[in-house]
Amino acid sequence: MCGIVGYVGSNDAIDVLLNGLSGLEYRGYDSAGVALANGTLAVHKREGELAALESTLPTAELRGRSNGIGHTRWSTHGPPSDANAHPHTDDEGRVAVVHNGIIENYQSLRDELTADGVTFESETDTEVVPHLIGRALEEGMAPETAFRAAIDRIEGSYAVAAVFAGSETIHAARRASPLVLGIGDDGYYLASDAPAFIEYTDRVVYLEDGEFARLSPEEVVVTDSSGTVVEPSVETIEWDAEDAGKSGYDHYMLKEIHEQPTALRQCLRGRVDELTGTVTLEELDALESSSPVQFVACGTSYHAALFGATLLRDRGVPAQSFLASEYSTDRIPVDSSTLVVGVTQSGETADTMRALREANRAGAETVAVTNVVGSSAARECDHALYIRAGPEIGVAATKTFASQQVALTLLACRLSDGSNHDVIRTLRDVPDQVQTVLDTSQATEIAAEYAESDAFFFIGRGYQYPVALEGALKLKEISYRHAEGFAAGELKHGPLALVTEETPVFALVTGDDERAHKTVSNVKEVEARDAPVVAVTDGQTDVERYADHVLEVPASNEIGAAVTANVQLQLVAYWVAHRLGRSIDKPRHLAKSVTVE
Ligand code: AGP
Image (tube, helix red, strand yellow):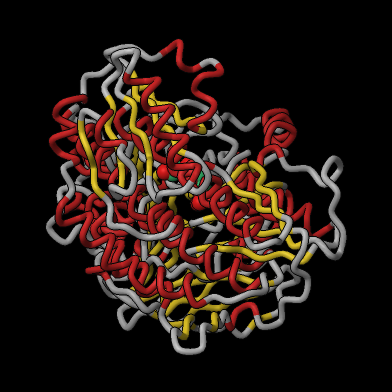
């Protein structure tokens, strides 16, 4: 997964491209590069984060050019290096190409081109594209025809943009990788994601799979795979550059943690009526099937899916959640009565997309629960339920998880019978309760106490089990510390052997039901083995007696407590990583959206 950006217009292209790339770095930061056209192609690329490229870029020399493309990379084929950085060019320097996705038949194309005398400079799959274009130019094709001919030869997923020496036009195409066009007053933009150009324009066109775009100083022309001109649908983005910036926080992650009350209010707006107890999800008006429900998702979204499946089962609807990478309709019964729900913040995760495509082929009705309007998942599915969290830039998902929890609660209400009054009251209070946690959390003290620990364990039951998994994932991905989440009852079946006085155990104990009291018993087992215990609790049990520290959450039911307890764990993860000096927004080896299987 990578980020691509392009611009043609009356401003200096280099400034727009560098700004755009900084807005896309969450998509990958192994290397970065730009190519400026309308003259001899000027290609500059460098291993490392964007700052490494900027430090060597002759920016002043590049001013005055009106069009160009840029790329920020997350390696798939070939390690991070200057040579593997995009843009890639043909032998003669006639065309430069940036690409996000995977070219599945690149090896056979590379063999064919090598046999033709082409010398490859990189190990990437992408480099076949400029060489295919170069060969088509040699055969006498015009740039646009040559570009289309090359795209016709490649298989797999791609968002590709190309510029030609001496030309002001940018050519682009997409299949199964995101590509959005920006329609500005000072020019036209393209990018993997709108934050790359939101400070210039909020008018966007989401390119459909199989479509091509031609951006020139005068116009944007969108065509389908046969070359027929398509009337683009121009949409207006509802958030602005300030929403996508850090707003004074040290990291996007901390900003996004603090945005949760607003995000949750947005998710609920217009969807619940407290008086009548009704939940209205207009996006799902046409939904027919409702049972059984199969969730497919990865990572944090999978934890939200576990939460959603628990909710549905508790409301009498058969539901299961699957890791998307393990989901296969060959082995899991799916038919036209099955509802398959893909939970994916980005809407671009390759594993989830594959699972959703399989489900569609098997005849299931599909819903994408996603944050990104116009994302691949939203397009693939019969219906899209938007979580409305606003842009999330930090690689670690935070506000989108909370918004998924709330959106899935609404979905559970929509799919089940029975009264929703209690749930709606809970959801109404959750944004303020999250704010209370943000205002009063002692997470920095806990982080100071335990940042150097050997390992961290998280335990919870029922609705708090996915939160335990999520707490551990958050901590490990940004702090690089070993962390595991367990169903509280499982601890004694093996993991207890790992518990020592150097391994803090975070116990999620909320409510006053049987599950909460059983978890208190598990806490006693841990305490008896001298492990430090941090109880995340609403004080309804006596767990505090056995805990070394307490992180308080407001009293609520299991849904509200699962949201607020998770916020405490997000803060712990953030402050541990902060103390350890980690690269919080861009953790090593990770990317915001993983578009490879
Ligand atoms: C979350 O912090 C991770 N970055 C990761 O697990 C993520 O949730 C996963 O890759 C799924 O992404 P998606 O929601 O965009 O599909």
